[in-house]
Image (cartoon, rainbow, N blue to C red):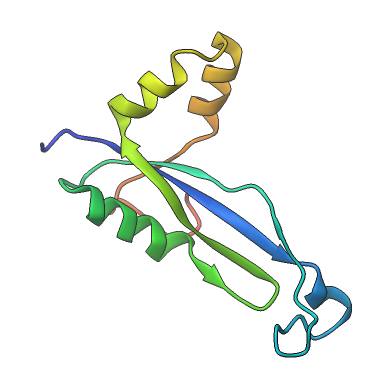
Length: 111
């Protein structure tokens, strides 16, 4: 499996309650909304769980106003099969906007 690539998608949540109030559940001020996320194409690892943990390490945030975390993961081949039914333009957009990462060469800020 040495040449396997994995695709990890993240989800972002934004707490609108933290912009004007405390944003805390205990205060009744939490108001979370789903936002976007990112797609990471991970190479340099042999196991899916290692790819997910690597993406979590470089992308996760858990603040009162913003959270980001991995939500969906596949092999690269499975991702390509999922994209096969999309239009060519959308497929190209997805592939171009995916962040290519590899723990052997990763440097913070270069994602």
